[in-house]
Image 1 (tube, rainbow, N blue to C red):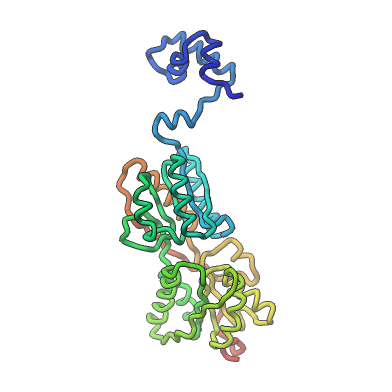
Image 2: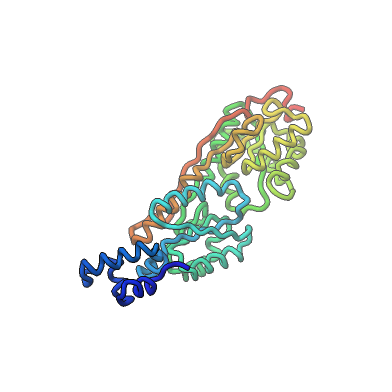
Length: 341
């Protein structure tokens, strides 16, 4: 059993309060008594309770983080960024998942609050204005990651999806592609998809090209990879020479279907993803994609939470820019591309 203050008091022959004061450096205790108590505590292997100390200071030195799922590789770097800053500041990080269910997310948030975490960081697509009233009742700092609804008073950090999508499509246009499909996702909030479509549209507009709405595809399937695989047949029908996919997993599913059916990437079809997951650099051919600064997203969110705990002024919404990572999955359209078949 852990050594307690009561145990030390019995061995040292003093009261509980004397032990507590001696261990905390209270000047009311004589130097000789303090040294004797501290020596006894050390000999007995006493370890101060961080929980008790933090509760006395009305802080638990813990941060709660809500994830949609631990299976999403996109979230790993975000968690790493949060944990880095939290650890350096002396905080522990507690993770909890909602398995992509909005009602469970708010329940998880309320549970973390009841457990007295000092702040909550939410890497969620769903919580936001839907639960604005519930979040308002939680009287600790809350920071949302990649929350895209503005003017709701919530603190958030997000990437610029419109700018990222525009970079992707501009890259394909600059290579000479004119029929570029956007492969959507079915299980993401519509605002995420709409922002990337807006970037897609802007790239066409800036290039003075007409955008064919039939090139925006919504393949069905269970999960991103499966939807990417099923997108290939739709791409053949639209005579697209390139595809900009909602995310890397969708792009990888499309690349897998191309490999299975003998469609050469990028000679027959150029493909661009979004996220820059670690696997994007290792698939063959390596995937051209839009890099989201995931580590920095987590770091920034945690710094915002710490600033709020210190009652400093914090910008409500912070936006981070994306970068284009050009690899081997894109090239100029060739005569044998599926769009010319």
